[in-house]
Image 1 (cartoon, one colour):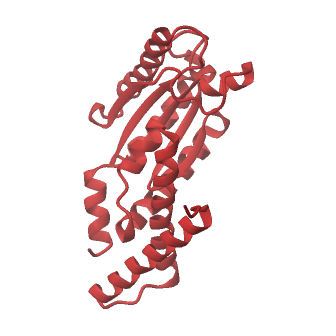
Image 2 (tube, one colour):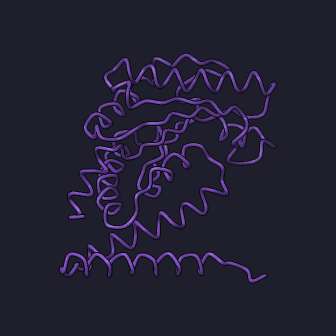
Image 3 (cartoon, rainbow, N blue to C red):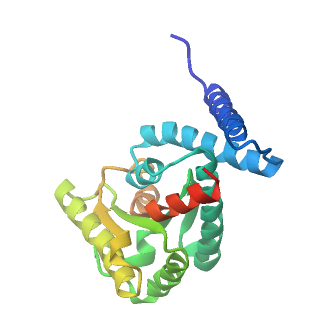
Length: 232
């Protein structure tokens, strides 16, 4: 069987993207500039590659983002909006969280020790200010859905870890709701120890696995507006 390499995947994604650009040009009888072409290629190939990688990672937050992917010219418009939002979140939170642009969405990862005492699910008062800043930015960009996912290390029983991760996810969700983020945008889920990002073979690695991930992705309103903006 022929081995499929990352280079082959990228080449295939770019070919699909160029076909999207060509189709859009024919349909609209307009010529896209270099920036527009680059945006479409970047959004589409990113979604394809991200989808392949995401399907292997079995990460709930990433899966939510990739599941909402539109692609093509519409995805490029959404991606541009997400770029601005991600930059704002990163500037506001600094080292309090890791901010990643994935496909057409954003993944924000909080280390649990920044939000909770060990083994607890109530928020640290000292770190609520970070969530307040985060909520302010979310409300500046209201046309997104938000999934909050709690994770633990492997210390303790599966049932205990599942319960703790679920309570932590809901603790963040409830606080964001309390400080003004619309409840209709918020979903929460705990995954316990089932989705580690590294092996749980050291205390440092276990600290990385104890985290809260937040997926931000376009809702139906943003997708409809992006479609109109893209002229489709």
